[in-house]
Image: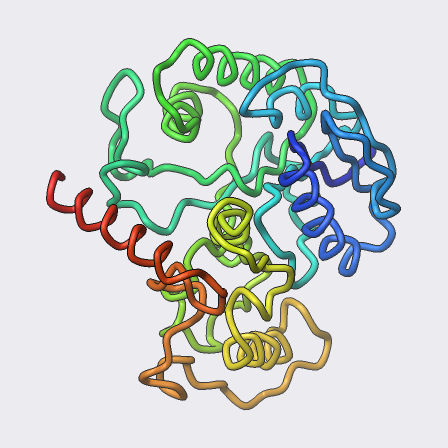
Length: 295
């Protein structure tokens, strides 16, 4: 069975981010193909094949996954960095149809608590679609088509509530990945020590928001989380027996124990590590205040 990574992006900004993310994938998976679906001209050498999108949509992942040439695909969002191998997700797809991680922020009224057409039990929470492993079959193609059609016919601006309901109603074999395969908020793992496996993927909307709100892009994991936490992750990975053959035996304290007052750059401050005019900072904070007051 063929296997490969897949990115889907529209517009020059998101296509550039896909190139940035794909470079981190290639670092840890040099022998696995990486394809891109885009509406832009692109010749970035990391990509094995570049396919032109045929549909004008805000969710190009649907077309990309349906047209994927791989029998086992890992589809990734463009606003992430891969820090270690996630090739074992392909092995999971030998027994499962789809593999995803839960969103770690499951109590957000405008996101993870959003309903599509009916309530879903809290015990079946929302999955994040930023990292999707999918095995090609008639069943998964039908699932993708249903998800795509339901989103296009819905007034929702986000597709993950529909993903949650579609998975809940499906007969697909679902593999739930550990959160380390799709870390969405690094501040939520500040208290984890090396009794847990190390992060594989850092996924943050802050990687894409500079395209619209700042004059400094986040181009590397260092830009995203800062030197202290990146060094902490490296030390964590060196103690992870699922990543290295001879892990360092000494336990590494949790980041919050080593740096009790240190916030991670990807945490609460959306402007951490970025050069942003003061008027933009004030405008953002004013809009956030208004949203809180009206909620």
